[in-house]
Image (cartoon, rainbow, N blue to C red):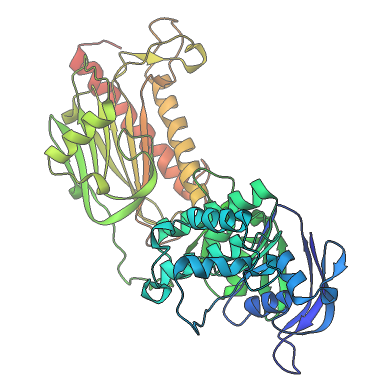
Length: 488
């Protein structure tokens, strides 16, 4: 374990890092973050002994690091500095082998099988074995970086200090290298302290983060406690948005540019819709922020084209997403820019309404067929069938994420109320239906104009969504009934 207590120091009389205290356990990775000039690299140099400490202590396994000889310290701590000066030309293998110097009793006079194994393992870890006989100066900056990481790993020290180890590396080699360091820490119990420039990489690979500001600790803790919008925004003086990683319980940060407000914000209107017997489509020049349960490009994203495609009521396909994707491409809708859903309802009977509120307008599109209506409370053991009620809500305003979710809830409640009004029943249970088996819902916003924080049923936006979705759903159901020859 490494323990740092009240560490203060720098290059001159005026300290750069001040009163830094933390500990790192065996097998743990601590990432050091902070803007340029915050003292990250200086802190690492003081811990490694490259710079003297003006005050405070560094303890390794309970002993003051000052008590170790240079060679003893090197057996305990391996260091990867940020920059490397090459006084001599070495092959890659010879450069990596320098990491075994602390384990030698003479000038490589005691080279052992263990030394050879450590060097070869380090080169394999970092993917540089094929360069072992190449002069290091002939390698690219990224390849050289991996060589020096291999040298640090070959040192086989229980503590590893890294200063921006992913510097010069492309994303594939960043991932490979940090996976290697992570595995090294877990499998061999190595304590790792690493300076990071990339906040997201640090979040993904570190157990804890130390955020520095003007030489002091701004925050210390697990990634979710450190990478917060207010904290990162203040320390880096930048607009940021944080969100969860799609696969791991780790926060990720997105930089937000300072947007220049347009005097005439872009708006969507009914003229952007095209309705045929084959599909309803909406195409706009600027992408809309969208959340949906569509077949193609479900979830959250930015899209310019939206397609609600009619399919036969007996449509059956083993891979609906692939078939729908092929359809969109065949008809000139790029997959990267299109949300696609499908319905067994005749799309030429789509109901499209434009509704005006104090903040601006929304548009609602509904296609509704209720032949396979379902009471969700009685839906156990039901088979999925092609449907049915597809709803789009397009908002000419700026919505935060919570408003998108609230808009979906409000729209669903309005749809269910429309089914109740039209006395639509589940044919198997005879109870009032709440929807159909494959309903889809889409909410999209221009993200221009007025900022609307909420979309619940009593907010200005929620009121408009509730009214619009109810109105269009009732009209769409009545059109469906008429086409089928149903009587109320």
